[in-house]
Image 1: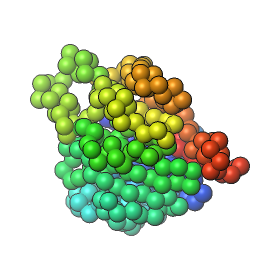
Image 2: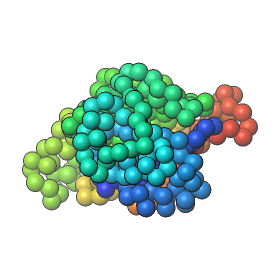
Image 3: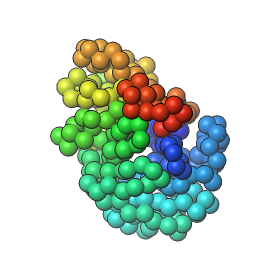
Image 4: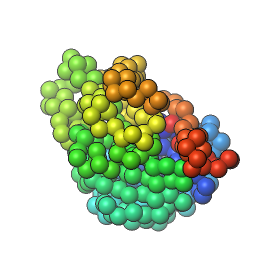
Length: 276
């Protein structure tokens, strides 16, 4: 991720065609600055893809679209919400997403599916097919559903929420109603719930887990990483890399081409990289 958390989420997906941004929830200036740190010009971006209509995922999507003549892909319900908001009106153009339907976007195949989260319209996760393997992408999920388990089983990399530690949420400063919302089935996934998913349902093909959307108030990066690693070790999955995304910085680039070439599926020099 270029940044991930309750103050803004942006992910850069790079492949053989133009780069794609998944959500644009930071300020335009900050998105441009972080793109520059990884050597990507905003003018080179070919599309913006939106997971849901919350502001920490859409803050400057429309502005980015207008300044760089980039289409914004969203479901019809999410588009309707964004079009009704003054700050998100007048995008350069729209691209259509539909749950359980695959869309070709800048050389990638995005298949969105609905997940459990409390946005006004549906929230979607993605299975993203790339030349070097499949990415499962779900930054806001209240609970791991059977559909998500099935869709993510054959992925090579997972970007998945690890929002809060249960104990830290319960002793934290939020009102009880907010705590109940966050910990509910339409809120945010805890470190412990993610660990349970890893122990029970992590697919054999997964080689990297990226922890996303960590709370600054109710989580600590080291705790999130430790909880994930302990679950992997308990499952005998010592080969799986763990990366923790942060709100205030760009995280490590993941190169899917490395794993593809190791398994004989890739070619030298071909890279599908996600700077997290």
